[in-house]
Length: 162
Image (cartoon, rainbow, N blue to C red; front, side, top):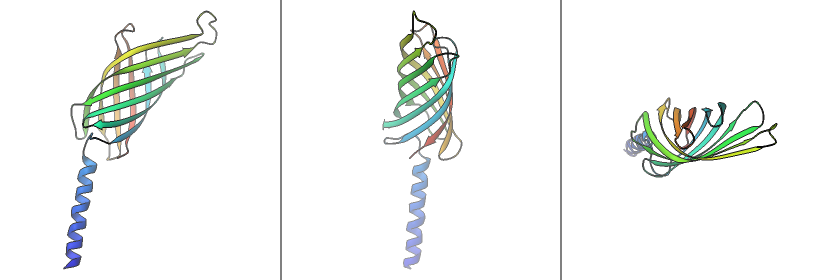
C-alpha cells in the first residue's frame, strides 16, 4: 500500500515539475542568449551579441545585452537596456520591446573624430520559437527612430535557465 502511495505521489510530483517547466515567461525566470547581429548604426556592421533576460513580473522582462561589431578598421560596440512585454505564451512567444541603446565606435585612421558615441531609443519586436524545453530560436528587430531611422536585426539561440 505504501509503495503505491509513494508511486502516486512521485508521479504527481513529476507531472507538477513538467507542467512548471512548460510554462512561459513568469516572475523569477532567467534566460541567456547568444546571437548574430546586423545593424545600420554608423554604416553597415555585423557582430555578436550576448543577452541576459530576467522577469521581475509576469510577462515583463528586463533584458540587458551587449554587442561587439567587426568593422574593417577600429572597434565598435553597443549596449542595450531593453524592457520586453510578452503578448503570447506557449511554444511561440511574441513580444514588443522598448529600451535604451548606447553605441560606441573608435576609428583608427581618423584624427579629426577618433571616437563616436550615439545614444538611442530602441523600439522593436521579436519572437521566441521553442525548439526543445531548454532551447529556443529568437529573431528580433529593433528600430531607432531618432537616429535617421537606423535598425538592428538579430537572430539568436536562447537558453531557458529555469
